[in-house]
Length: 444
Image (cartoon, rainbow, N blue to C red; front, top):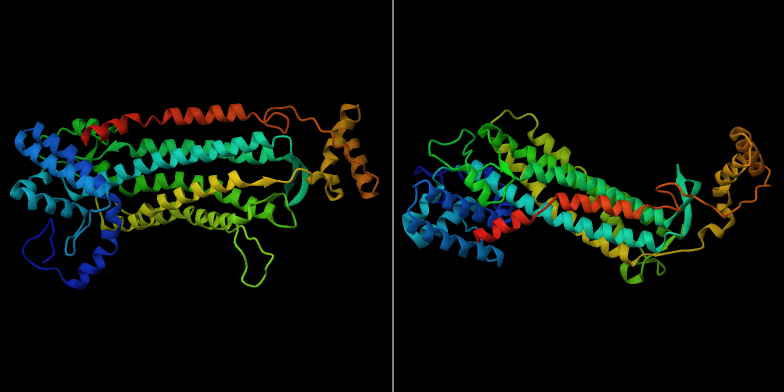
């Protein structure tokens, strides 16, 4: 007979069990160490309100910390017939401690327990993604500064438009990551609130100390209203997914540019041959598969908010099993984005840029606006200057002056990378993870 926290001495239909469990056991493995961490805080709180003796607390904590260590080593498993991670942890405790192990569920429901696990998992992933975003940002700023004087054509409608530079191109994606960080910060604030003690969504008659578990786990505050605490299931995942999708959007657009610029018809950038793949039939091919896969995987990540919204947006208050399905798209998304960030940082560091692009005659027209502005500065009305240069181009008489001077903020000659870096540093500083790191370390 399967081990279930809600067991009432009857067996559930095997097909119903298969259908309702789905892939939940696989998803629960993402949450295992966070379930133990939450239980440690809960047990400390239970002793403080008299539901456990000090000796009982100490015995339970000793075993919970052993289980946590097994999670860290990758040894923790949910055994066959065990319903979920919560049941497995309780089962391991009762094997060691007997009935004492059954006491840890006092004042909890699996509803607030899994919601706590999800929040602890998510905030740890946000921490990791923040650091990876910063690493990519640093690489982009470095490349922007390195190639700040190397010109390239800018495009509108995929038509040659005006002079740009690799300093601008790399720096643009760096600043895009700054804006993505605002959404990651919002995701962190929404995530880092404590739902524990809301039980099944209506609180408990036990005198739970929710502020205590909030401090023990390093949360910013309690999710106070117990009904709303349960309503954050799904909402938290959706709002976090918008932040992940924003980062993914930056990576996807950058990857598309890189694929285009690497094409022989552009030949703006090259990748080391060891960072490309070949063709089974065409011996000359060196394909930018890394950027293509970053693009595809990040495009898929951008669908995440829509998927989560469709699963939870027509649910009333209270818990529903529909929310289980969100795990399957949400939990693996962090690993996918982290992998893309790591690979993007690596491949950007290996890019080499071509330094003589605008010497080709085909790009002469990119300097037309520069000539219009030169005539305007000489006193000619803008519309007259525009018409003159346009007619010269049509007649084949246009000779570009490639000595350009852009000085305003954010332009070719004034990238403001120091200002962009300052913005990123402010965002990183606002996300002070030290409180969380200390709280978790103290519990263990």
